[in-house]
Amino acid sequence: MNGEKREQGSGRPRRATLAQVAKLSGYHVSTVSRVLNGSTVPGARSASAVAAELIRQVAREVGYLPNAAASGLRRQQTRLLGVVMARLVDTVLATIYEGIEHAARDNGFHSLVMNSWDDDDTRRTCVEALLSHNVDAMILGDSPVDGGSLDLLVARQVPFVLVNRSVAGYPSITCDDRAGGRLAAEHLLELGHRRVAVLAGLSYASNAIERTEGFLEAFRAAGHPVPAERVVPSTFDVAGGRLGAERLLRTESVPTAIFTVSDPAALGVLGCLRDHGIAPGTGISVVGFNDVPMAAELPCPLTTVRSPMRRIGEESVRQLLALMRGEEVRDVRFPPELVARATTAPVSVP
Picture 1 (cartoon, one colour):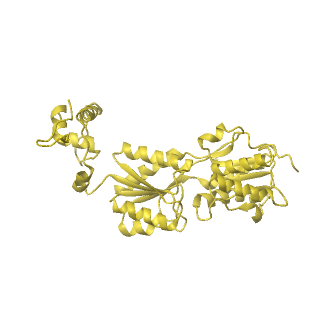
Picture 2 (picture 1 turned 90 degrees about the horizontal axis):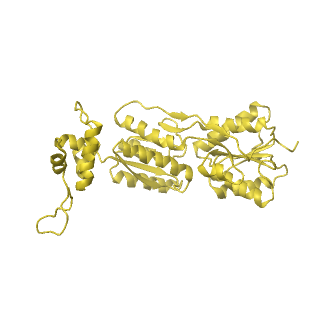
Picture 3 (picture 1 turned 135 degrees about the vertical axis):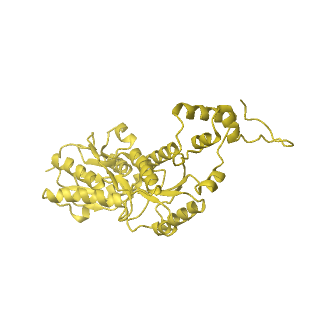
């Protein structure tokens, strides 16, 4: 079988058709369409796994590609999911997006992703651009606690869910960030730390707010409230961690431990401690959040709170598809896990 047939009077290859795939595979064209376009027909029997694989094999051999525009017009769907992330250079967000992309593909959808850089105007431009491509639904991983550009989606009646961050009143899929902050605090309390600090992330990001609040609540409950001057706002990246650590090291009462609400910021803290000749763990303990792959591979492996980043992305697609079917969806909070490594140790300063 060969897809290199050419149109009469033209040097261009002729596009392989559903009818051609149906004839060569021996299945009805409607069955072939359901398999290759990932669609379902109410009351129709699904093709068996063996039949579906045969149909896909024939389609590959003849070079058949679905016509997304035509399919979208027939079904009033484009089978495109729009995704907005703050910045995909962030390992956490990139891993969440991998989960989104794989789950979307497994369900017959493709994803279009844009970076908002956590800027309000850029975020709105991203949403408008994706809507102009007639995406069927959207996943947003960058929403500020006030909702940002969600009004556009509500006005257009476009189904959407949130990942990584939450906004009251809208379905979201995240780690249980407050519980994760408590885990970090309990770990440091068990090691004897009382004079601690927090690099609290962005003031408008729900994940940063909840991780910080969970940490502070645990220290208050233990009778050791953290003073406001040791709760430092920061960005989630390495530069933010380094700047925050420099500020904390200049204080009159240097903390014995620092909790950062993201692993990249924790890496910045570790770099700052190295430059000041301070050993992580035995000098100042450091706890991150998310457990990115490099955390375990550092010269001094990072203690962190693990969140299931890829599963968060995958679940966001499942919840979004349920919403598109008209089903009731719910907030999903995955339980975190404390992973203790070498950057935390019992306190050595009274």
